[in-house]
Length: 622
Image 1 (cartoon, helix red, strand yellow):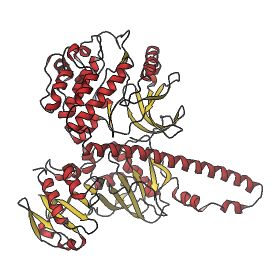
Image 2: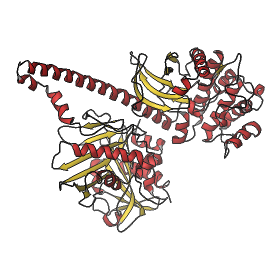
Image 3: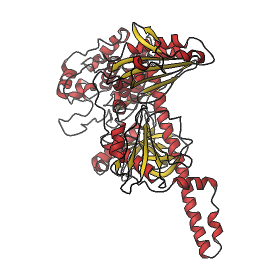
Image 4: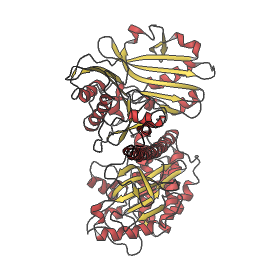
């Protein structure tokens, strides 16, 4: 998600808009909050479509039809306005990622996850078809994963059975090629069996990570859908038979949703999402919660500012009326603190969107970013870069007037849940509010991609009312949105890899105990369990055979490889292991650093750490 842009509405009907979820061909999807606190997903139709009389008529009809779908496995319509200049539709908000995103990030589902997916989709089809609708565009992007099962969304091109007409001009096909039925690909009249075919293709994709009709071009995919046998070889045997039936070319040979539901109910696997999927759902829920909390905080802050402005106006009138200037000093401590942070130097930018991928964050060249962002507006660099700590870079810059200041930029790190100790300054970097803390000039913004990344700018030297730190942070955000500078590293660099991606979830759950909470990004992965805490980092530092760990060079063997260990940790139930993955230049190397600390004086920290490190080392780039 990202913040509302300048053109986005702040209110639609009774719903207060919170953030932007995304955008599709029909409209923009916003996260909203109803007066009761219920979260809704609001699709606002694009203006150019809303001006089309035929489209508006069709939209009204389909909204009414969609409101009749009330099953537990679909997102219910809760509000709408089809008569406004920009029609909109509000549905129940599902706090979960799409199936497409989950498969891309975590890989194919287990048999239990596939059973839960297939059963939920079958139950959704029963309700959709009972309402007289055919979805027509069932695909992984239109299936959201909630903690208790899937939800089908987006009835944008659904049509009633009766009087089924072509959606567009003759010869046009609407839908997603890899997941549409053969009859839909050929433009033939559709029956509910077309949706069953789509479910079969979705389950096959979720089982293997690829479409059963994969091709190198859309025409080839469509040809495969109409003429080729599906590739279901990677679907678990317990499901393969029913998936093959769903993918039959002849609609009459496909099972009904009721038959599909009965069949998957007999599979001997617990219907539950894999742990990695549950983590993705929890993270998605946390993301929406953050936006609700943040926008509420800003609404309260704006109200305070409005009250302060009104108070000032009253005081000015009182001053003119000679009541006395002492009234101007009666500002509360909290208000004074906020005013100290709000100096108004940073100007809003125009809808910046800092949406880097995980690899882009990991390969971000912080020193070049600092140089490009700060150098142009603060004169010339007057000292060497200092990047001894991962995720940080600092340098001194001298402005044209000869004043030198030290700029310290850091990216990532622990977000500590909420920004409860930080408060809005009133300035923004694009859609991201700039936060400040205490009376210092440290400034911070937090991106809202997955995962969220904190960007912090600290400026020391001659004070200028925090102007330098806010303008520098704004310049950094601009540079990240337009052209984030990247390190040039070889393909086998471990710094390209997300450390968390190499941790075996079953093993880490066993070693750390219970549910895990992730922290640290982009080159670190912190996991906190009931029994222990683990921190895994992929960094560049002095070679351990030159320095060891904390100056010591004690070694052990892990799977036949030399690993360096800190003996001093043992007394604290902590074990730090360092493995040299790739020498780089001079006495530097890319290293894997793993630190595991047990809770409540539990023994065996190094035994636990070695088990985890073994699985990580086996997956490192060669």
